Image (tube, rainbow, N blue to C red; front, side, top):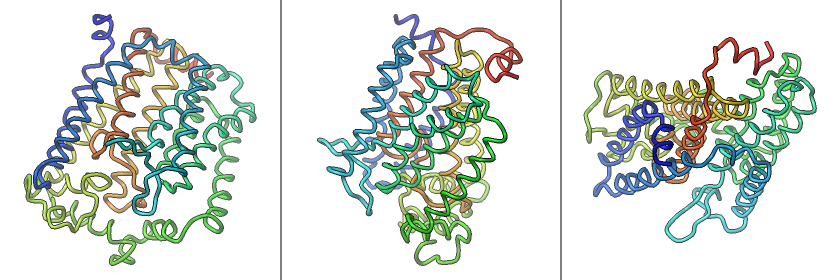
Amino acid sequence: MFQRLFRNIDWILIAGLAPILLAGLVTMASFGSDGSSAWKQLMWIAIAFLVMFAFAAIDTKFFKKTEVLVALYGLGISLLGIVFVVGHISKGAARWISFGGFSLQPADPMKLILILILAKYLSRRHIEIRNPKHIFITAAYMFVPFVLVFFQPDFGSALILAAIWFGLMLASGISKKHLAILFTVGIVSFSGLWLFVFRDYQKARIENFINPTADIRNTGYHVYQSMIAVGSGQVWGKGVGYGTQSRLNFLPEYKTDFIFAAFAEEWGLIGCIILIASFSVVIWRILKASTYGSSNFEILFALGIAMFLMSHIIVNMGMNIGIMPVTGIALPFMSYGGSHLLTEFAALGILMSMRGYRRSIHRDDTKHEFLGM
């Protein structure tokens, strides 16, 4: 078993993760008076690696069982529902379930569960995916957790759930006509949300996205301070422990939502290039794994994980530099917290468990077989 586990681990991907994890720890340690956040995060990283190895040791056939996926989906929906009853409220949002000294954000594992169940559904229907009914069925799988997450309220995680569904639908071969219909429905839905659902602070964030400096004393404060932090790092950065925006508490949430800005202030453009290169290695290895999937399920799952991580990276970095609205999305593997970290490593563990069934196949053959080209 240990030989199989060792063989399945993608050590290049792990090497790509190392600088990201280290960057998060160093950034947390440089601003904490006692370094407690860094030590807690180090503990979560150790647990996350154990979770990854545990999932990597499970036979991938387990994750294809319908009864398993239905049970996981039901559990995820139940946890999202429980949040409204006993959820811990912080900054006006009930997103966490607290028990003991641990807080779980159910929206995080729900993203992984959605990838699994969509990969299962689409892998068995990729030939007939042009039938519109499959668009509505898969949309229903996404819509239930989307609504529950949106009304927590957690617009950022709801956006990621929609991005995962949309990305997998594109990968499965949706027609251009249906794609145009989806865009139209999306625009109409957004208009309805803006008029009847969005709260004032959510509208303010979107308006601030269009013009980040319009109200820097109120709704635009976070983005404005983040942009100052990123810009003040210049090329080489101010040095570890010398990030004034974070140290003097001008930059809020520097351990979580705005950790990229805190890192950029200390490490500058060079550090950001290294960080983005490390993320690129991780995404590259995930996409490479998709080309060797033994079936469409493995291919779709890998693509879903890539979409999941890329959405988080783009949204988080985008809001840190003022080109995306502030949504409270964590930067994968780097932001403080155990809930998102365990989910990300569990996803990588499942991906690595599938390496034991990988096949060698020419890229053109993969396109013909999967996309029907």
